[in-house]
Length: 552
Image (cartoon, rainbow, N blue to C red; front, side, top):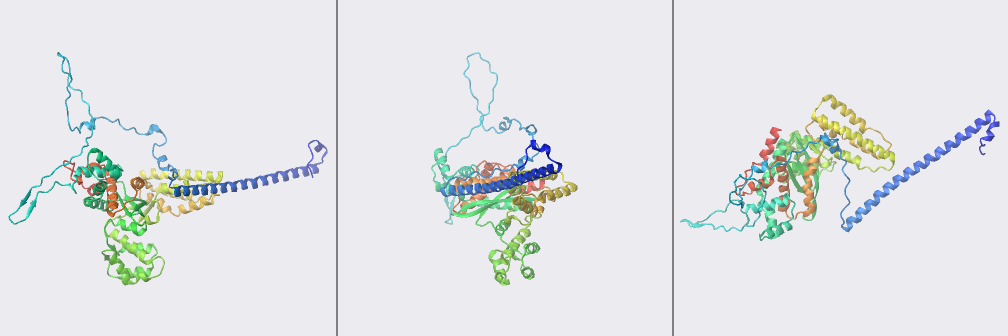
């Protein structure tokens, strides 16, 4: 039945008008229902299109990888840390650096030369006009040392010793130059050979590699002591890892450090056992003490196994072989239970050794949330947590708005946490915890975001660790900045082949980063440690690390 036109409505009764209006309302409802179904269909198609685009991009990336083409740029950083810095909103609030002058150079003048001017007779001398010129002199030197040789009455031959720092026919200045360019300048061995040959020094690539990897025992020992001093005095450390290739096999380089030191260690595994082994800082013992037993119980080790280890009088084991034999004597290696009793007991004994040597006493470990780093007192990096929300790919405008609102709320909370750490207050800490619950317990009509917020809420204590320990950082940017040197070196030079090369790379990069944090010139540090004549004396880096911890 069709609806009447406006002219025919004049003679309608009230009942007939009501019937016309009811038919019009029904038609409007049907139109709205059709539009809603159409909108739902459009939203579903938008989600499908987004998924297909992601799949298409993944296939493009795989094709590029198979062809050996460079990968596409990674996801742009969210900018949460920079945006929440004090004074980030206005450029006028930024502090301007003082102008660079010549006063500092005037205190380091190494030579002075008087330049004569050609003037006519009768001219009057009006003094000097000074100018400081910075220059660098590079020249090859080949020195012949004529060593006296004496024959004693006893028949023994005495030979005059060489000056300190000479190794394998190469002097300490050359060794310092090569190590500084390779570690700090990221110069490859091939370019080092070309550079040195151009200066006038005949040297081969094999000899350059020996200079980079050989006779570094003193540096290796100092790097180990830096790690021990850092872990023994740290209030917090940040950790990170990155892929590394050694002997054509995949591995991992782990960074450990704070604002005073940094060390790098490369191994084949990124397991929790491997990480705990690094935290022992070179000690080889396995210790069953109260800390070890608490670790085992906290990680679900069977009470029967814990009782066996606790009841045995042996508590300290010199190395991995002695520890493995002890587990075998107790029959723990034959138990088929979950979790793996050998793995859990070993991790517990490693943690016991860390505590036995006084390392990481009450220190907080801040990480990106990787499972191997979640030991001891752990805190989660806020930048990595927010990045999970930033990486979501919403399929509809409503989902996009939900992600933007959630990120805004997280940014505001992050800024207030940073402000609270500068001026802690218990009352405001309670308010911040309640605010965290409101943000991460929100239920949005976006299932992926809801699941993510629920997962992050389960890590509440790790994300809000700063409310208990205001001195810790809220992110692992320090570790990411440190480990970028390893990533750059991996891209330029590839992996290592020998154990000596792997150790030399980790040690030199770690000492370079530690020098930078302590305000020590790495070039001058190498000059002192390699016994360059006239080099400035640099105190031991472990002592400087401890000194900074005392004065902090």
